[in-house]
Image (cartoon, rainbow, N blue to C red; front, top):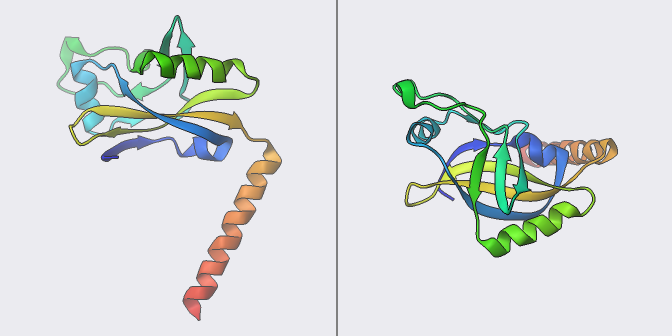
Amino acid sequence: MGKVLSQNKKARHDYFIEEKYECGIALTGTEIKSARQGKINLKDSYAKVVNGEVIVFNMHIAPYEQGNRFNVDSKRPRKLLLHKREIRKLLGYTTQDGLTLVPLSVYLNEKGLAKLELAVAKGKKNYDKRDDIAKKDADRKMQQLMKNR
């Protein structure tokens, strides 16, 4: 993974991550320029398989300042670039109960192309979230005690 442009930190808190995929994003010229400046927000974004294509919804890319008339809607649905067999596999996952497609991060790979890390995820219940928080607190206290000794 190259330079990380944006992360969806809430996704790891709200979901159990089952499987991850790396996929390209179909962006316009002004969108990629804005993305390279790190003006992407993945909060509340999700993906769906629509007509044999994977589309990401609610991913916000701020309009590029020097973009003028070439700027597009900042929350428009964007197509994700995956192989057909991967799309079929994702479709199979999403038809199962409780599984959804959640973007985890957007980054530039070594060649400078924008990639999105897509996860097949299962929603957590409130008690699962509380368990995770308690575990993190315990680990943090242990690290602090080890550091002080």
